Picture: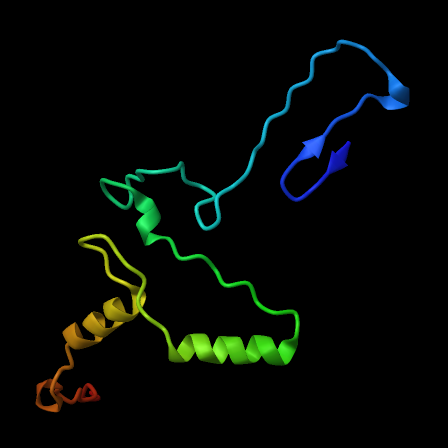
Length: 117
């Protein structure tokens, strides 16, 4: 078998000339959607779920370059597109903090020790 980046060629060994059938099948997992089928996903709602996909940027082999890329990605961070009704983690945390209730100090009553008899 001879492989290239775009194809492969299968040849019979030792210059054989048999007429045996040959077939092959390609199996792959889609990046970030390993557990999902293509297209519509019930979790994301109706329509094509691919618009909510963000490919992971491959990190460089060089450590210093990888650190720089990570810092640049943090500076230029933008929220991932979400379907209606979904929230990204940062917005969810912000909303949770805004809704948290803090009791005022005056509502706390000191607890007195029981009297000894």
